Length: 365
Image (cartoon, rainbow, N blue to C red; front, side, top):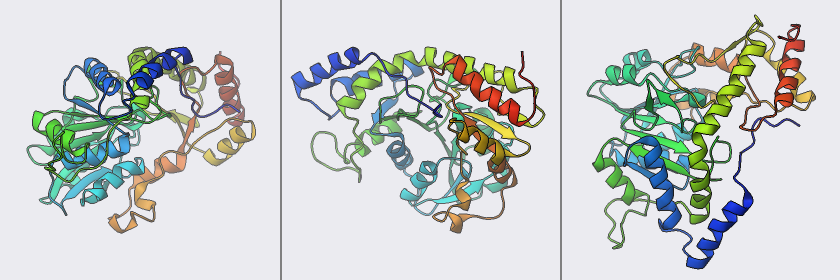
């Protein structure tokens, strides 16, 4: 089996050496040595001090929205083509999702959807850097004006750049995931970045039950602490991000080179001024996506249809305001194929040979 993804891990002995330090101190959580070091290394990578570790990206999204202190019942413009955590975070904050369409080329939400959907009740725009491809942040900021706040689900985007600026510095808040499916991982973990001291201060309270050391609850919070076991792993992987992105770029370039001449396929458009992490690599099939999926799976190649549109899910259908044609078209055509940091060239060649055989194209040379 060639898996759809596989995390790249540091040498076990390096991790064990850090675990010995945890065992010596017996500090397993509570923002101890490795959680602080993980934050410091993230801050250095992003070039901003306003970055805090959380237990995972899902909780990070909930807390980031809570830290903006948005009024209950207000609306949040959000793409339907996103992981369900994005929508769940909106609902946990008692906001109302307003589902937006995507650009069928970039697979991200265009600024034009803000103009179409935002109104007097809109408090926030929650956009997704899909597969690490950064949203057009300048256009989104211009479309939002001085009204809605901007939050990015940047779960896939640690290492992405927009016009030379790191993801994590583009919105009022951005949330990264370091789960086991990401190109750098802490097994489970996340980071929240914010553009204002007041937001990051409130986040610090919210991720620690609502208090800071004195048990005096200032806001109703929850347990969003990152454990030392996860943070220790994160300190080893976070500094490999540039190498990891370079590996993904190389793998994606080979896919594009080997499959780019097939009329039946197209790929996610990446603005040449930007950099994506290629957390996932998507094929957009003009025909017979399901047949290609069956062929690859039968040959031991794992694939994924990603994302299932949120507005079609049972939990969210009541918020749908009509068809989202680009989202629905993309979902009917998309198939993600294996990409991970140490994907062997021979395994990738097997994937491309199977795809070419399905669409009756000779191997590209």
